[in-house]
Image (cartoon, rainbow, N blue to C red; front, side, top):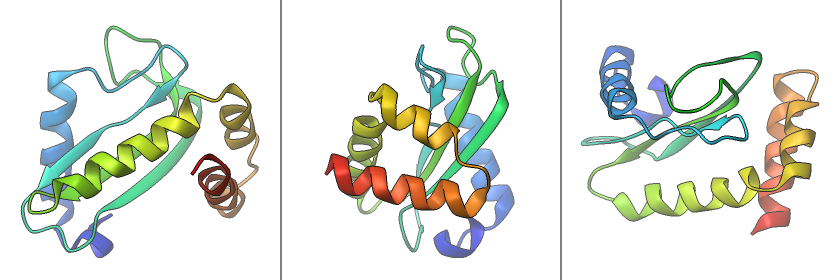
Length: 121
């Protein structure tokens, strides 16, 4: 995410770590939304990771195997909120989660996410 956001990787890592410490980023369905609003982000962006074994990002929820990491600009917080809402519409749909989890590689995962976004708009 460093290139599209224009921020150094350590800056992003610190922002995400701070957000994760506050908790509340994961759902019972195995989806997590670690996100950070950071001053100076050039472009709000999202990264999607599918981890078959999952990662425990929230102590109050099961491991998450679909992780939507979102970085937004503090000067344009509405972009961040709108993106969270769009991704939430996808994540709440069991069929959409199944299709994302079935993607065999990164390119297929991106294509599946774009299709889901178009159909849930």
